[in-house]
Image 1 (cartoon, rainbow, N blue to C red):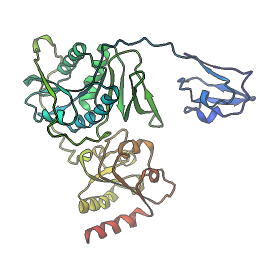
Image 2: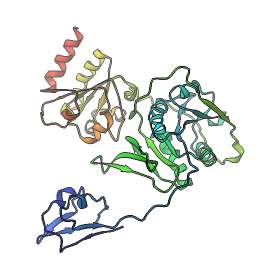
Image 3: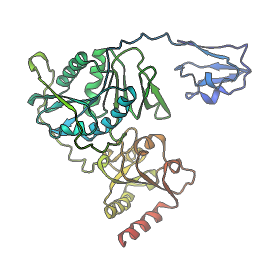
Image 4: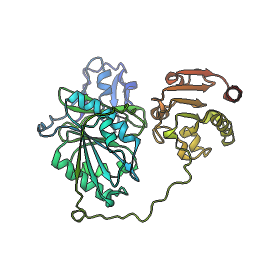
Length: 393
C-alpha cells in the first residue's frame, strides 16, 4: 500500500490539513505536501473534495474456510474463584454468538473451581473444563499450550479473553503460535454478519483515535477486552448447557517457569474496579493534601477513592487508584469526578458508569459531555457542602 497526491487535481484548499491526526500535511505554494510518517489511515483522502489524494488499496485477503465455528470466552479464575471478567465477556459473547447463530462456549483452566455451572447460567452453551492441580496457579506456559491444543482441535471462529495480567501474558502467545491476529485492550466488539467478521474497537494513539480492526484472513479472530467494559447479564436459573471435562497431560508440555510464591499486593487496599460508588480527583485538587477532602466524602457514602492520571503522575495518590486508559476500567453505579477535566484517556476508563456527577469550575470542561449531572463551581466549596449535607441526612 502507498499514498500519492495528484498535483493536477489538488486545488490547495487545505481541507486535508486538519483531517490528518499526525499533522503530516501542509499546503505549500497552493499544493498540499506530505511529510514522512504516514500511516495510511485515509482520513485525508476522505476530507479531500477533489479526490486528489490516492491511497493504494490493500490486496484482497485470503478467504477463510468454513470449518471454524463458535464463539469462545476464556473464563479466568484465581484460587478456584471465577473472576467477574468471565461473566462480563459471556454477556458480550452471547450477543456475538446470537448474531452469528452459533454456539457460545466458555473455556476454564484451574483446580477445584467453584460455580462452573454459573458459566452456563450466564449464557454459555458449552463449558470446556480442564481441572488439574498443576493449573491452579495460572502458569503461562501450561495455559498457552493447553489453549492452543483446544483451539486446534475444536476450531472456534472467535476467541475473546480479559485484558488482565494473565490474559495479556499468554493470549498473545497463543495468537502468535496459531499465526492469527489479536487486538488487545478492546473497548467494543461487534459483528459484520455478512462476512462473519469480528469488529474490534480500541483506543489508539494515546486515546485520540478509536480504531476498529478486523482479522480478515485468519481464524480464530482473537481479542482481549479490559475488565468492566461490559456489564454482566442476570444469570438464568435452570439454563441447560454442556460441561465437557478434559484431561490435562502435564508430560507433553514443557514449562520454562515455575511459581515460587504468590505475594498479595498489600498496598492495594482499595479495589476501585469492584466499587459501586467512586469519588475521583484530578489535577484540580492542586496538591496531595486535598485528597483528604475526597476521603471524607467517600467515607460518608461508602465509596472508593479514584484519581486521574494527572493526579497520580504528580505523586498525590498511588497508581492503584488510577482510573483511565492506562489505569483501571471501572463501571460503578455512581462516579463523582472532582476537578477532572475529562481527557479521552480518563473517559475510556469510566464512561460506562451508571451515573456520572462532574464537579468543575470550567463550564467547557469535556467531562460535562459525559456527565449525567454537572456542577459548575469551586470544588473546594462544593465537596465540603456535599459531605456535610450527606452526613446530616
